View 1: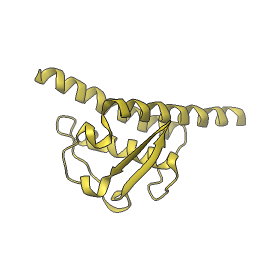
View 2 (view 1 turned 180 degrees about the vertical axis):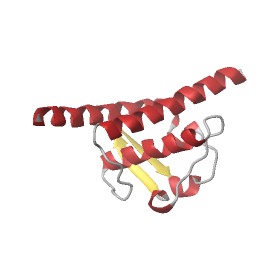
View 3 (view 1 turned 30 degrees about the vertical axis):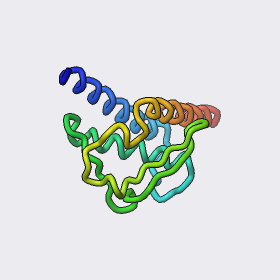
Length: 125
């Protein structure tokens, strides 16, 4: 059971790392001060990536400076709210982001945004 939980955690962390990198490759900068839904989504992906990148076996929220605030945005028909200020220094829990199902909505919204940005870049060529 512990090995299975560890593999899920590693896979989850890798998904956040890959999404964050895909945002970078698509030219979508991380702007943590922005309150636009798309930027809040980008910031949450970045913060999840950071929690897992520093220690995948024991992910800890790191929300300092302009990241130490509440993120609120829509993902499809659902809304997401994560208070990073209150989570700073705590062990990452899937419930903090609304569970696995919500991560799938976050991932889908992120992929849609990344694909849209790449289409714009492709049209410019």
